[in-house]
Structure formats: structure tokens, C-alpha cells
Length: 431
Image 1 (tube, rainbow, N blue to C red):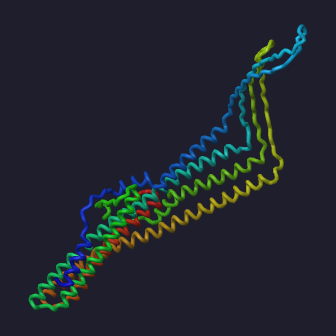
Image 2: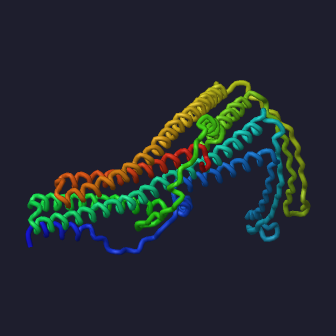
Image 3: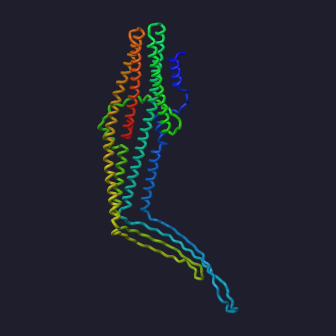
């Protein structure tokens, strides 16, 4: 067996894939599974719970505080005295027991509207946390969708490369047969063999890409093994004409990123108002009721009641209040600036994604026609070669052109799907 045949056998052995059972997921299932295990979603959910606890805490500050305490003690005291009858020292002692209980309560009547502003800030933070959770879900869905499409595109490209290998092998058989019949040169069979080798190498590359893409998809959905992306006919449908002006307006109005920035700005404004409350006096009311008793000949539980109204007005505290106001003012200015940038960024990203979507849609149409043209070119060249009217170089070149056209068609299709998914993540809804 000559070296060329050994090369073919080695490449075939390398590209042969054993049948391995893999978990398969749809796009919907992949997104749902990723939401359960990805840290970004878990962190956003935890932040929402933390803000909920903050709101309860602020609401609780409007209620009176209540505390109860109780204590008891036992005391023994040893002493000596002189017995008047015997004149000897006599050791004795006394024991006493005591107890006390107390119930106290206090409520802040006025604090310069600090609690009201704290509650407003907490509610704004809650809105921001909810928007962050929605945005985290859409961004995670976008990441999972892109990885899903990477795996699906690699599997589609695998089909293209396998077809390329099949065409190259068929052409090699034709070249060998013509060489045996004396109607072709050895150069034809060698060039066909090189074509088979190149096709096999491209197939190996795609198999490596597929393994990587499916392993990453498995990681996103919480698996340690490769996960296969299931195809769906809806992936190959294009959306109709889009109203770009309406989409931009919608993106600015309902984008989760913009909503989170708006809520953060409201929280910063409320925090600024709360910092100014330190300039106002505070008024609080407190009261307590206690019982105290001690054992002895005159044992009794004595009660004590107390009610006090307290006003506190710090007139100067070393400019600490001014520092707090400046810090909160800067935070509010930063939040407003971030809100403006979020709106501009959303519009810029949406404009870019819409352009990518339209470009990919046109590329789909062009590449589909290119595939049809390349298939016809290959058919003509193969027939011309069979009749001796063209060279093997013409056939190989046409085969490569067909393979490239098929690759371009797959790439255009999935570029369209990625651009569509990015737009959906920006506006916060499916197209």
C-alpha cells in the first residue's frame, strides 16, 4: 500500500467519531437551566432579598421599640459578735434576696424626615434590584443563547465539512478511475488526494470547535459533560420589517439596564434628602415600668413609672453633616450621569445590533443564492472533467468554492440569530 493511501486511512481514523450519548437541550431549556446555576442570577436574587429586608427594617423604625428585662440576686453576709453571757465570739450571717423587672418602650416622633427618605431610598433600591434581576436574566439568556448557537452552528458546519469530505473522496475515486483508464494523469489523482486531506483537516477543526462549544454549553447549564443543542425550525425564520425609531424609544423606556439606572438615581436622590435630615432636631418619647423587691421584714414589690419626652438638636458636629451631604450629592450626580450614559449606550448598541441584523439578513439571501450557484458550477465542472474538457484544478477549485459558500450561509444564519438575541436583551422582550 503506497503512502497516499496510508494518509487517507489515517485521516479517516482521526475524523471518525465514536457514538457517545449526550444530553440534549432546547434553547428554552438551556436558558431555564442556566438561570438556576449561574452566579450572576443567584447574586441578583440574593440582592433582591437583601433589599426586601432593608425595607422591612426601615418600616420597623417607625414603630416603637419594646424591651423587657429581669434580674434576681441572692446575697449572704457573714459576721461575728460577742456573746454577752459566755463572752465568746459567735459567728453568724444574714441572707437577703432581691428581684427586679422592667418593661420599657420608646418611639421617635420626628427625625427630620430621615426615615421617610430612607424608606424612599430603600424602595428605589428595591426597584433597582428588580430591574437588575431582569437585566441579569436577559444578559444570561443572551450569553446562553450565543453559546447555544455556537454549538448548533458548529454542528451545522460539521455537516458541511462532512459533505465536503464526501465530495473530495468521490472526486478522488473518479480521478483514480480515469488514471486507470488512461484518460488522466497521476497529477490529477495526487491533487484529488490533497483535496481529501485538506477536507479532512477542516473536518477535524470543526469537530474540535464542536467539542469546545458543547462543553461550554454544558458548563452554562450546570453539566460537567458536553451538551448537544437541539435544532428548531423557528431559528430559520426572519422577522419582518422593524420600526427602528419605535424600537429605540421602547429600549430607552423599558430596557432593564435603563430601569435599573433610573431606580439607582432615585435612590441616590432619596439618600441626599436623608443626609440633610441631620440639620433638623429629633423628638422622641420613651417610657418604662419597673418592679423592684427585696426580702426582709419589710419585703414589698415597689413599682416605678417613667415617661420622658426628649428633643435633640445638634447645632455643630465638626462639619460631619456637611461632609455627609457632599458625599450624597456626589453620589446623586454620579447616578444621574450614569442614567444618561445608560440611555445613550442603549441607543448606540441598539443601532449597531439593528445594522448587524439587516446585514445578516441580506447575507442570508446572498449566501443561499451563492450555494445554489456553486452547486451548479460544481455539477458542470464535474461533467466537463468527465468529458475531458476541464482540469482537475477546475473541479477542486469549484468544490472549495461550494464548501465556502455553504460555510458562509451557516455563518450568516447564526450571525442573524445572535443579532436578534442581542436586540431582545436590549429591549427586554422577544421580537
